[in-house]
Image (cartoon, rainbow, N blue to C red; front, side, top):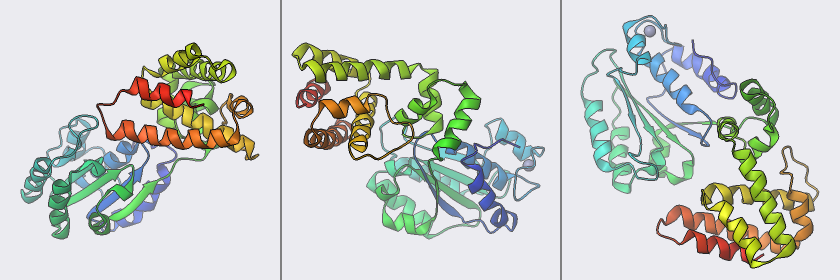
Length: 316
Ligand SMILES: [Zn+2]
């Protein structure tokens, strides 16, 4: 049996009784921030539902379990945007409706996983809604999203909702420690927004050092306020604007927390200094402007990111 991530285990345990009684919902909606490893949970659920000889967890020995482990189970279907940042099209949903109508090839049921379901176009969502309104015994749906509120309310209401929360700092840190050893774990977790898997990725990719450089450059620029210094900071952001600016958003919010005397675990090292070098009004307005900037970058692809980032920096 798979060892589940410790922050996922409780939900799996919670599902056990209904799985065992074969009363598990035909359509579930699972929400979790990115980097929580919910694919592990979805796959375990699917494998369990497809297993020929057990209800509450996969037996691991039947033909169905073998096929599942090999990644070739004909009754398990995963649907997601074809490319990062793209939508899930109505054609993709039609394909999954075809699967739903065909009888299963092996186990008597089909499991369809729609990952990043919030990326469905409006027509895709409407098409899926029809399927959810006329559920068939032999097909079950798992929808997973980062932000539930971006789904049609009518779809949400057709699903049983579950969520995997960001684990408590201590639990996440303990897990990270066992994975990567003692390597600036608090900092990595903060930069990953609390997500343990993303924190591990940052450590593996040696990104924590990149953060230190960026923080240094920002502090330097806030001290001397020259065009060169702002350019230096902007240059460090250019590898991945969204990631770098998100880190700076954490830094600014940590600086604000420090000003208000709010203690939190994993506060970024430069937060106090940023608070000393910036007025609280400026800190507030720059944090808000940064949220807007990140939203713009998310919504529009053709922007001059370099210029907009430099503008934002110089508004300090
Ligand atoms: Zn089995």
